[in-house]
Image 1 (spheres, rainbow, N blue to C red):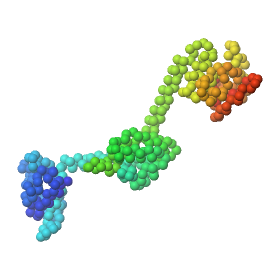
Image 2 (cartoon, one colour):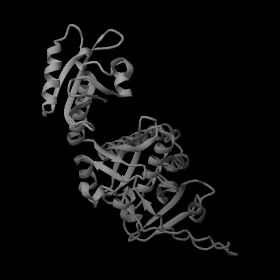
Image 3 (cartoon, rainbow, N blue to C red):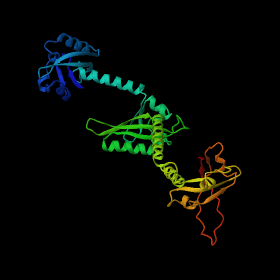
Image 4 (cartoon, rainbow, N blue to C red):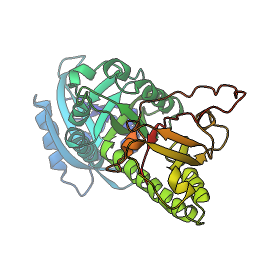
Length: 375
């Protein structure tokens, strides 16, 4: 904004550098001339004189006039004129502030747009200084954090929200301040007072604010709660993994009528996508003949036909080897899988090292699996 001053007769007595940049006239070209002489030849110069005369009588005035640029083109200006006492010899000096009307309207429009966006946007918006302290937060961000604006102002994220990964977020903000490049879609996770019993995920973006010389003066942060979207993505990914496992199992299981080979294929298909280790145990009577025998009533004898991984796993190294027949009482987890053929889970179990082999073969040991299903 340019600053121009006239005496009580309307003659220009001050012409600053901004006025020269705005209208193209050097101070020596305009000082002493009547201010209305700078209006466009086709404009109503009486308007300019009227505005100045009202100002010199002690009333501040505003208005829009068309001036004549030094290069010969018209330029619409907004002016604000106010009288001030003259420093010498009494009288009155009129101080006139001048701005490009188009630019002034754009600024007012931008300010209105920004204020409306800030207040009504469903996106959380915060403005922070170079020390990462909040200067302003909009209602959406207040709702996300579960804290009023007064609880934010002058404080850092690590101070007000210890339940989220605030240190990671502040590291991203410092990167923006130091390097000037925006950070987009940085994930904030955790809990806030708005919903202290559930974890949330937010997508955060940070942009540096700079002065006219390009020096950082702060940054803006925008946040969107993507918890539902994130869960949907996780569910979709899990569904894709299950479908891929089914397709892989369909291709690998049942390639032969051999029972032992099929059992091993089933164990291999379960590791590592479903479990770290898996065994496939078949009714001993079925492994030796086609008769299933008495089934699961009164206990069970199973023969281990499949195990994965075959080596290198503490769990499977400890479990009974392939071909071993295992006897379980009726109250063991394995017989309890049926009826109604529901999976059974046992408490966590830590494998123990196998003892050295005895001099004479012992009776078949009992082995308690972690989980079992009936086929």
